[in-house]
Image (tube, rainbow over all chains, first blue to last red):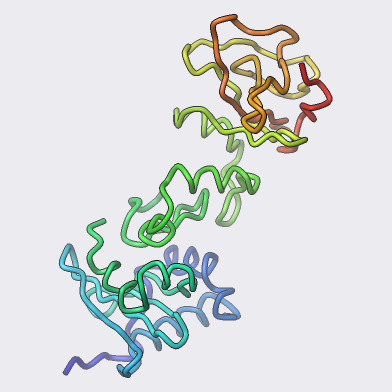
Length: 112
Length: 150
């Protein structure tokens, strides 16, 4: 069983946090970038459930990708402790990948 | 970009997130979408003197698509077969444009010339696929090309 340490999953740096907040903050109704980061952290550290799909990329730092099929929220972290991204996947993309699990598996198979 | 275009890094210029936005669309499609929505700087303030059309031209990304309906939005119009400028229109009706590359603007929708930017057809053998005409001072459309259709 993997133990995630909530409270230690920030973005890599303030630049990344600001950029990702600018891009995705509105998708979550985040008040500011810190609020957004806290949401990302909570998501990446949340307990698994039947509709939460997770996998690891085989390349580089073995990013951990997860998606909640209920909300279409998607996040990526590496080295357990650092968030790369956190966004809401469009329904169209989910359909294109034949489901949330297909989407996250495709992300894990990505080599770039 | 400050960070390489991969691993969910986001371009501060166009806002593309690599690994997310290019999961479905090619970079060419994303570029066209960015242009069609005004080619605005995405994150914080653009660098002083930044001009999207100059950047696109300098990046040599190929002919910029013209969706021509009624209004043509800025940038460089250039002749794809030649590297040299076809015309410089500073002082013409395209006020404020410093350097313009190209001549005829082909309406991709109709296949006919929408405008002749130099006032004369450019090189009989040339085919111009382009483009975007901009007033770099205002970043607004410099001309309604249908008003000047050939």
